[in-house]
Image (tube, rainbow, N blue to C red; front, top):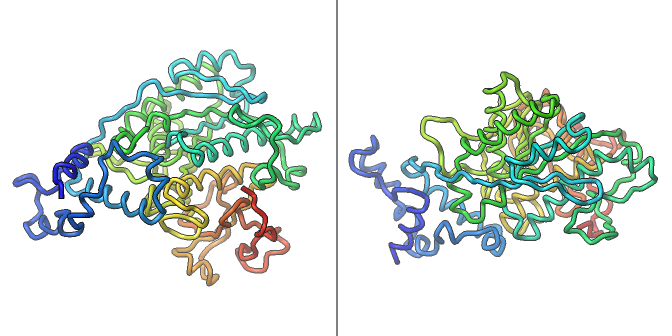
Length: 434
């Protein structure tokens, strides 16, 4: 074993491998039990990469099981002394606002408000702010983010599409112009009868700054969230827009940043944002001392979370008023081959629910496990994961999803045979919707 490599990885996370004399109240037996050598072999320790060597690409090239195991090992090593202090606050975070013609308004966070002032009627209706959590360096991350933006563009521009007889989806600059898709995420017969909605999207690309696991793990959630929260207060003030129409969405570690942003907004204004949604909230490696960090109920009027990689990139910890666990708590969800794909499925599910007509594609029931759910032994009324989640629900919800798009197992209410009505899968299982 090369101990310098292991210690290098741990040092990058500012972690002591074992308790220092006089620095802990643990007795010797507990201290000995917490030594990595008690639960990791020398070869396993040797195989753990340095934190700045671990990237999205590297995790995507591992199997789901291997990637989840590695992340669990690194996380538990980092928590031995509970003294990992966050030290990364990104600067120059880029923000973009998609336009109907496929172009984007792009600017650093501190310049975007001036750009928004030039956009006619911005903020008059609903405003959705998305905080990304991983860099778009692989097609998995790019595709999930693209699907979410496309879904909102379709949702917010449906009335105009009807008026012009144009059902073509919004395509961003990374899409081939005129390319069509059969994905249920992108089109639905039910959209013809969907209610219209108007609004604007802002994407705060925090994920672009998290280029390796070291930055991801050492992100100062509280300071980064406070920076974005102050920015939201400034935007609401300078654009004279209503704050109660804002929906803040965060991915992975960005979910916790979104929660901290909402808390800062409340601290500065005395008001709560309408909703915060966490898309597979991550484990928190580095924590500020004496501060409760992370997405939590109370951060907004309603907080919901979708957990798709509980034992991989995500966390099993309840993070919201309503926490949804597709197929129950696990390292991943059906069809996900690695931890990156698993964590980004939360974004894909939410995007599918945003599409007009698909708002109730993910019915769920309160339950403690997938087995309890399958046995019709859940407790409480049905709820819907995604955009149409009722703001008065609370607790843990279980549902089943498909391995391929369309992911939702929705069935019309009149055809539901069980009390939660989600055991009948779509009839198109043999068609590749991706």
